Length: 249
Image (cartoon, rainbow, N blue to C red; front, side, top):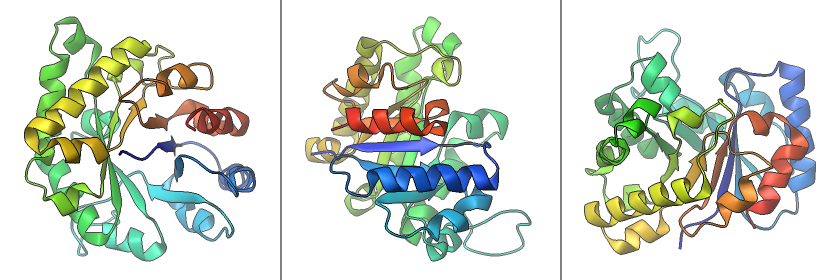
């Protein structure tokens, strides 16, 4: 059965003191937390600060990395370096990386393989634009994105979770209705059955993102195929994020 995961994607927000303060507050509140696995994806320059915090039940992950293990790649960090630092998770395939930085499916697969080989758990993001949804192409787009995972072995798939984030709902304040979200999550679950097997589909966590917040998380998390959330703006507010985590039980 898929485990529950609630992840905070802080994106390019917060200054160092703010990041440490927020993480410390979450750590104290979630120290004895029983329920969903909680992950924080801070800006990379704060990873070391957060990983130095002790007595926390929160996993720390990276928002990005390069697929090569080492070499002349100025400005980049590798999955092995992140693992060595203490990270346990990493994001791959977020729409902002696809759209703003032009990351292709081919590149994303290289990153997935590199991250898994380094021992990271990958949260692989997928989602359609408003135009694609209005044209009725959302399932075709999602299928193409999920098919990136096809070459992975069963063992490698153990290190994969999927985050469905409709692009039209990211940072817009517009959230997919619970029925829209559940429909797409069920579709993704079915694609995993077709690509791999029912048992593999059952244990891969599928998270919802896209303006998920403390006001809609309870309804979204009650859906059969939604195993948690990848939270953006609401994760920058301690009380709001803690409430979302509470709804995941």
